[in-house]
Image (tube, rainbow, N blue to C red):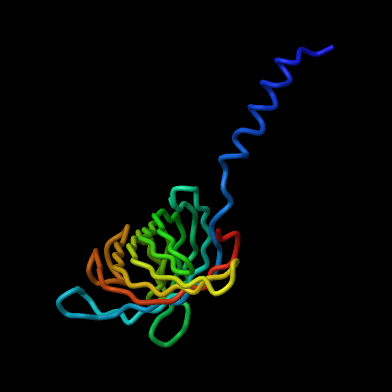
Length: 175
């Protein structure tokens, strides 16, 4: 016969972590574009992008997840892509969700039949509206920075920065 104390200890070690866990987060798609402002941008690339993402949220509102982004040129053809990790902090009040999210990753782009490795970073301020318990629509404004891991084209400067605007739709275990 097993010891009742041992059974209780095992039960507490299994059940207690599940009690403090909180299922939250989302996954979805987004569309954004660069917004050129001569005072805030160093180059006008006119790029837009489509993003797929997913993240989890703990009980304190900390986000962590990943993303993949297809970069589109001004003509709408795919110019490249990046993928990486996202982290952030969200705040909830009724159906509204506000968040600060940072994305970082690596990828590649093609320009004039040559390939280049990119380093990518973006910081966003988001404001979302939960339209259903499992769906939210988010508008965001942020700042993107791109760097060539190998200098040269597609960006004539080794480092490009510009503001961005976009929308995202997320589905999942939103709490």
